[in-house]
Image (cartoon, rainbow, N blue to C red):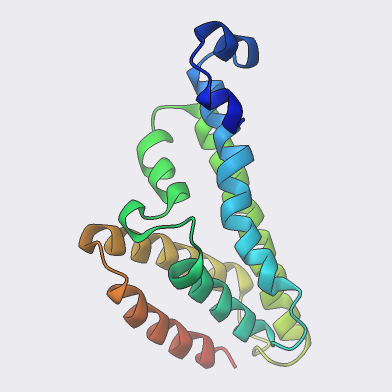
Length: 167
């Protein structure tokens, strides 16, 4: 994919894609997804951490350590959701799949925490995950607006407080 994007030939482009929309969906599926979801995978199987610690460290890593996700560009997935989903059904479907994949991973993690007794039994995983993902998208936008990771620090402190309340 990356090599194709570096080629200058219009013929090479149309050999691989029917149109620009198809290329955009390929970018979502082949570049965006691995970038965001690999970060999640790093902590999902970390046995030394409980489920709430894993959740916290996923967001910490995405905000402060993941080199591919720069503050000035915000969250690529959130940017595309805001800009493209109202106009393009193919983008909406590809992005929906990416977000649902992330949601499922987090829901499974919350369920794991409940089954281990780390997270209170009455906690509803879907609600927690909606809150976490919407908070992440929002703080990435604030970071982009201010071009500073400083807002991430405040967010992470409050995220830690929120997660502790789930115990």
